[in-house]
Amino acid sequence: MKTRCSTPRPTARIKAKAKRRLRRSSSRNSTSESLSESGEAAGGDPSALKGKVHNNDRKSRTGKGRGLPKKGGAGGKGVWGAAGMVYEVEEPDMQDPNYDESAQGDTVYETVVPEVEEKELEKMVNPIVQEYFEHGDTKEVEMLLKELNLGQHKYEVTSLAVSLSLEGKASHRELTSRLLSDLSGKMLSQSEMAHAFDKMLKELPDLILDTPEAPQMLGQFIARAIADHVLPMTFLDCYKGKVDCDHARVALDRAAVLLTMKREMVRLDNVWGVGGGLRPVKHLIKEMNLLLKEYLISGDISEAEHCLRDLEVPHFHHELVYEVVVMVLESKGDTATHMLMKLLQSLWKTGLITVDQMNRGFQRVYDELPEISLDVPHAHSIMETFVDLCFKESVITKQLRDACPSRSAVL
Image (cartoon, rainbow, N blue to C red; front, side):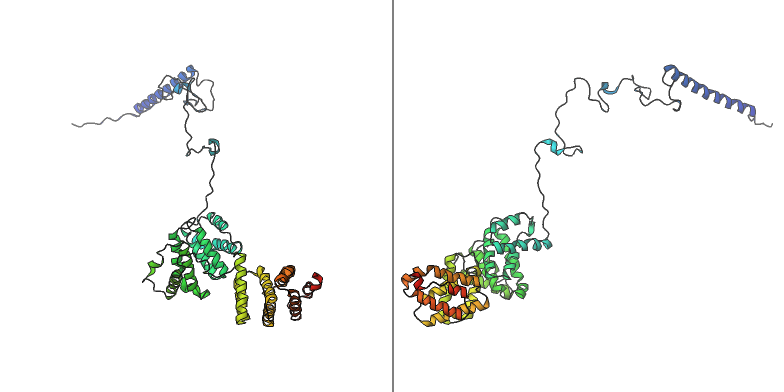
């Protein structure tokens, strides 16, 4: 028996599709009619999409809820809140993007100075030290250094100042010792000072290339620093038996010798000799008198010139001229007169004594001649003879010779 499969006819398929289309269209018509009855979609924007709800509609878009405003009308953008709501004072948050620092009362501004790099340290510190060699004011140096953020390289101020003074004059080294003494305990501690001197001891092979006497000078710096309590008392003891460099050993031995002298642990004020205008006037006068007395004994003009240069007081050379003329007036022979005249002549030719300093020295004697005559009765006649001799040797000018007071004019 054969079985025949039944297949749907084409007409049945067409009827099924028609029914599905009818169902879809009827559902769309019912939705549009419900919207028009509620009055929401009717009369709306014709360009708006069908089935869309306006954004301003406060009703729930999900078809749930009672359609009331959120939070009872106390929420939303630009809304102050519900009636009768009291808010607590909130502390301002510094992390808030809208935080206004100027609106928080007194504002304190702090200048932040970046730390000086090691390669820039020398360029910034050296001009300060060089200016200090001119004015000698340690407080100004301290103020300028505090304006710099030296950081961990602060100790190098000591080594830079000492290195500059090694290439300068004795007065510069004296000023450097004073600067280290004044900075100690204020800006630099003893350990930082010791670190700086330890660094310089290691750099002596390089320092002697420009300053052959650097080991001896550094030893004097160390002795002065220990005596001034800039370096700890045990600074030298730390190097016993541990120094391989010959130059460092010379420096440490020099410091040890200076500290074991009779004036042990007394402030070594004269370790750099006498120099600079910062010395007391009485001390400079004493040094010039000693210079002239040694010259009268030795007759060495070059040594006298060297001693005068070491004093480093060109503005005070008129005192030497004054002392020379007074010695001539008080001398009892012609030998001292000719020797002192030769000294003035040499100092005049070499330019150590200028015309202004020479005139000022002689003029001081002219003014004090009446008082000098009380102790030296023949002071006027001796003065006239010496002035004529100096004029013949081209030591003084004609105007200065003519300004010499005579005995007859006084009487």
